[in-house]
Length: 294
Image (cartoon, rainbow, N blue to C red; front, side, top):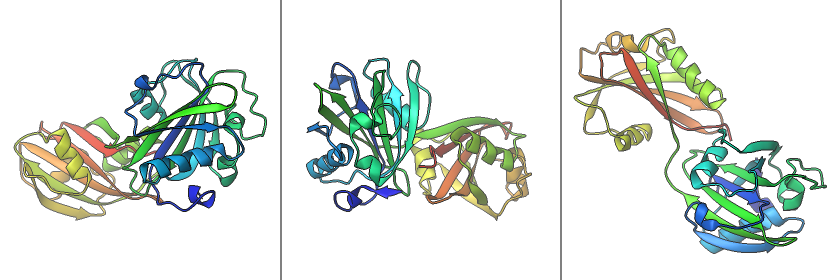
């Protein structure tokens, strides 16, 4: 991981995504809500300079660079939801990822035009209209930004930063016969990143399905009023089925059951997966915060 402040000055880590669009028009109303705007002349070091300007404008850090994606948007502006999807590594209809560049001090020190072809090679000879997605990360992955910059003239770039709050929640619907190991594997496949554990599984019971906000609270490791913890098992057997965990934990019947698995994401720390059933364990709705190995 390369620290932006190594180019300019040190900053604490947050999650940031910078999108540099080589499009003919600039329509910030189609992007996410903006916290700040800036204009910059492309030059060696422009990506780092731009991010530094946003730190100075907002008084908040914009993070450590991990990778850069060059994206062909077909010459159109992207919505905030589309930008979020690209930042999370998902596919967007009509948008093509033409190259991925690992983050480095040299990348922050090059020009925007150089990166537009999806390769850090000093040429910048892209023949298509592309955007650049600069992604950076935090240990907990809960704060990130999107900044769209569009060429205005030969070397002038207009930029709109939007600091996004909230979390990307990934939800999978699993059968009760799915094992603990299978649940872990399903989330690993969905995110493309291996995790360690689970180290513990907590069982909660209640009378109704938790709300979306309550699920986020559980994912934060906090308790909610509508459910209470009744059992904890250390290093549960990966072969246990979701439907059998409560019984294996000594828990009697309850209308709504929830299991919270504690896993570990290398370099980023603890990760919780919350699985909830309202039909006696036949089906489970499992949620975790989106992770992508930044």
